[in-house]
Image (cartoon, rainbow, N blue to C red; front, top):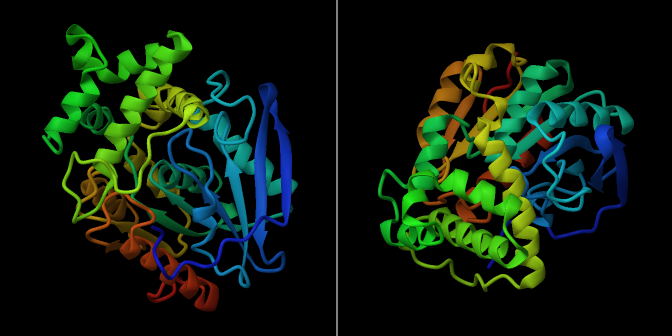
Length: 331
């Protein structure tokens, strides 16, 4: 069930198939008010693709919302492609989209990997960023990635055991490597089995307070064949990025943040987020002196949790009205 307080779902008023280098074609949508404040939404994953839910945080009367399916993700083509698909390529694509659509500066909104990409974009093109709203920021370090796949913290041991059972016992110490190889090389049915196991594990960790860790997410039906094929492509891209720590760990992402513009910056994070550790948000907040960190406890890693959705809507309403996220304007 989606939370109350979101704006009604509305179709985009314009879509683009934007050709970018090396044969990729980006699916780009524009929604809301063509004359409104311009915002770009960066989806998670990597590889997940945009969702209509992400537009519902925005007042359609006040915002022009640009949604981009990143390379290999969503309705961009070729879906699932990993060739010429690195963070540097995504940063170049953001610049091309902005120039193609005639946007000098935009509010950048991202969740999970989308928040990470938003930070990298702000360091790459600081003059293009009017403000940053970052939900559940992810630090792509070897420690964080390893903790997700190996569950070293024991967050959901029964669910991890089911997840790990898709790999031979001798390969369970490197679940990411095993999954990456299988998603690239396994026959279609084998790849679907791996994607389904990954999806179940992700769902087991994503919920907020009130749902026991390791239990299936409520109202989450088993994906059908078409959805499973999309998950294979999504996780193929995601494993490609995670194997390389998203090309953002040398130097680590927090060490790159001195280049960020001094613009309104709000981080929203839940202290019970089992996918993106809360200390990642603290590390980013510590390196951005003008940022504000707001805890939204009980939301887990779920963007549709009522507490997180309400916090997102409140922050965006405040920015549309006042030019900041409910705190004093940044000089």
